[in-house]
Length: 222
Image 1 (cartoon, rainbow, N blue to C red):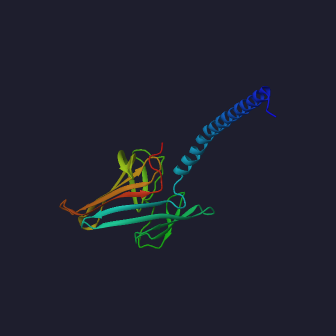
Image 2 (cartoon, one colour):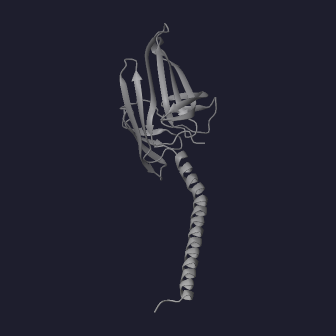
Image 3 (cartoon, rainbow, N blue to C red):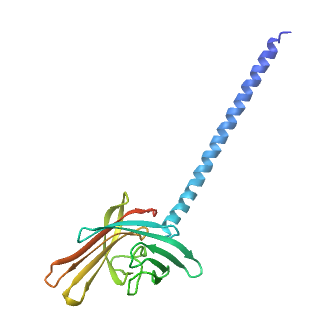
């Protein structure tokens, strides 16, 4: 028996209705997903931004490249290995023999103990506070460095604004010197440094310069 024309029309109407409802449901699902993502993305970005700014963090790593007055190159690696919430200390590993493995007080940046050869009081140079201004004093290594200004640098593929800190000193025998450090303003991370020494006649007798080449810290955040 052949279906009647009425039945054929009814089936076509049912199919069109089903397709219409399916399309409507699909549009609502897509709209819901878009709205949900729009609400979620700013929240996720805020979490990422907060995490980026909280340095140091376990797993933070930096690689520095340097050249001394003899033209010899140096690759220096630094990493944060562990955090102790009870003492608010972190363990830092530096490939530089003077420092080696260090336990650092996060509240003061002071190295409370280390296995390297540095013989003096020691503060880490890997990061500094971000709430500083021109004229501020910051402990770096065994020095009282002063913020002398800011400048722009390109570091690890990013253009960033950095603080410039300096300290000058006079040693026995008439030798004088000056150390300069550069730190990312947004994170406080150490990105470059240089030092030079002169004899009593003003002649350069030694110098050194190095800069950051790789890190998992996101620099230049606003």
